[in-house]
Each structure stands twice: as C-alpha cells, then as structure tokens.
Length: 432
Image 1 (cartoon, rainbow, N blue to C red):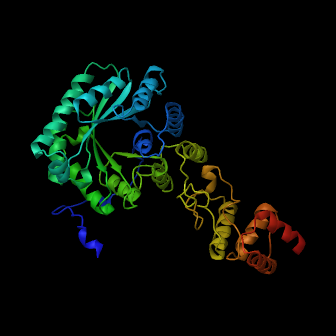
Image 2 (cartoon, rainbow, N blue to C red):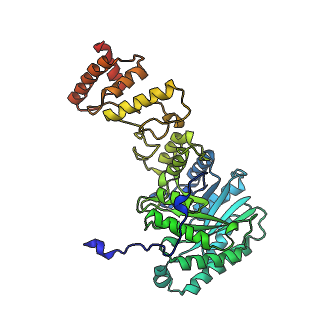
Image 3 (tube, rainbow, N blue to C red):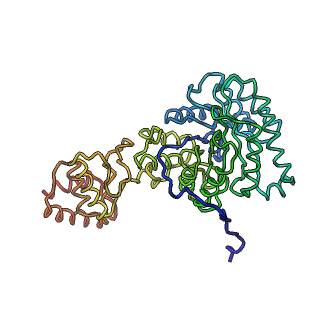
C-alpha cells in the first residue's frame, strides 16, 4: 500500500503541443558535465591530472562545451579551472562551463577561477520549486526571483571587463518540480537582466534534476517554456535530464522535438543517484538514424577504457551500442537472420545497413564480427555456419549445416557452457 503516499505528476493543461509531429534532423549542442556533475557522484572524485586526461578525451570525441568544475566547491575544482586557462589547454573552438550557486561570495570565487578564459559559460542556478522555496529557504516567490536577478546582476558586473567571450546560462535548478508559471516568470526576469541578442545569446537550462514524470510530459513542459520565454530567438534552450525513472534518453529526444537546442549529460550516464543523460547512448541513437552525431564515435572503446579506469565504474555489458555483449546473439533464430543479413549486405554491396538484430554495423566502432554470433546450447545451425564461413572459409551446404549444428548443440549442452570459435573450428575439422 506504500504507493498511496505518492502523487501523480501533473500534466500540462490547455496546451496544443506540436512536438509529436516533429523529427530529429540534426545533432543538438552537447555539453559534457562529466567533470562536475559526474565527478561529484564518484566515491573518490578525480584529481587534477585525472580530470585533465578525462578532459582531453572529451575534446578528442568532439565535444565543444564542457562543464569543467564547480569552482566554489573545492580547491581541486578551482585549481583545475585555473590550470586549463593559465596553461592554455583549451582548444580555440571549445567553451568551458562552470556551475555557480546564486550566492555572492561563491559567484566571486567562481569568477576568479575563470579570469583569462577565452570562451566561458557562466552557469548560475538557484532552486525554484515550491517546497524548497517554502521549507528550505523560507522565502517568498518574489524573494526567490530577487535572488536569481541580483545574482545575475552581480555576475554580469564581475565579468563585464572579461576580454574573452562570455556566455550566461541560468537554471531554475529544480525545474522538474517547479510550477511552470513560476519557472517562466523567474527565467524571464533573468533574461531581462542579461538582455541577450541573436548575435550574443544566453542559455536557459531546464533540468530534470529529479526525473519525476513521463518523457512526454517533460516534452510538453519544454515546448510550453519555449513558447513562453521572452526573446526566444536570442535564447539557447538547454535540458539537463537525470535518469531516476530510467528514461533520460527518451526525455531528451522528446525535449529536442519540443525545441531544446542543447543537452547536458555524461559519458555512459554517470551521475547522482540513477545517473545523468547518457550522451553516448543519445549520440549513437542519432547516428543510427542516418544523422551526423557530430561526435567521434569510432574511438568509443578507447573512451570506455579511459572512463572505467578513471571512474572505477564498469560499463554494463548490455549497454546500448557499446557494451561488450551488445552485438552478441546466442538464439538460433537471431543467428540465422544475422548471417543471412550480413551475407546479403556483402553480396549486394549495400550502402544501407539493414541487418536484423544489429542496430548499427559493429565495424562503425572498430569491432569485428567475432562476437556477433556466439554458440551455446540455444544456438542454431545458422550461427554455427556463420562461424565456419567467417573464420574458417568453408560455406556449409544445408545438409552439412544441419548435421554439424546438431553435433555442436549436443557438445555445448554436454559441457554446459558456450563454445568458442576455436573449439567449433577444431570440432569441424574432426567432423570433416
């Protein structure tokens, strides 16, 4: 009966949504928050040199916006930001982003960390949901708005003489639990202070800080905000989805349909609680639809190795597109379809990938076909024939395929485990 203490998330009423008729046609602006949001979720946060190596991999992948720190939170974050700037370690086409709470002394500390930056995004936030306003801060609605407005004024004043490009980003931090009327009111007040233009845009970030609603409701909320933000043509709308319901990728994709221009996330979804948006999953989803993801995905196994070494977390073997077993089929029916699909793809020299059960070509990420079909007692003659033709060079006729397939199934059942390709080839030699 514990379910009775929970309330259903409210829908957006009296709203004519258009996003269901839209289609993703290009990659969004990506912002990695690995070195801030992801880092703060680690049992042992990264040191400066570890952060630098991680940063360099993010750059190598093609990420153009990277949130590098929360400078007022620790000396490590502050000093890492200074190191990047002072030692000129940031490529010309990459912007670094920092997170700043709406408190004067922390704003000042954060700005000090960014002195000399060539391309800096100053990400100011304050919590905005009704419970936090009433219980945590004990402030009225107008006082919470004043907190955001006065903090942005102070931030602008401290950065007005910066020679590099300065971009302001504001988050109603608990947007997912904030009434839409209040969320748009506070955002519009901050927009007035920044006074962005088409040539010098600001960013409004709308986070699913706690993922609490179905993805379609999040999309409704994003489209509603896009329709009601002032000076929309001068605003980059960003989303920052967490994964508490396990649907952050879906929420992000629908948010893009609803008008979001930028997405914040992390490699493999590392982050607080159930994690952040998985940028890798999202980018591969885009890639698999025939759209340039704008990220270098072919090096993903290198990135995976670095990620596991630095975070001490393991990428799940069933992780979409990247897990060690993602392209693996044991089922006989699946194996037969895969074999015939790959044979057709090669024979016809097809320019379009359409192989059953394989969402992308494993070779897109420099993986061969040796792990696509693996054999155990559940496997069939198609998969076994594939192994013999792919790795031994013999094409089995139907009769031989059936007879040898039965032999392999019996052997796997007998030893109660998977048979590797070397064992299968040896058994085939004996069978011949």
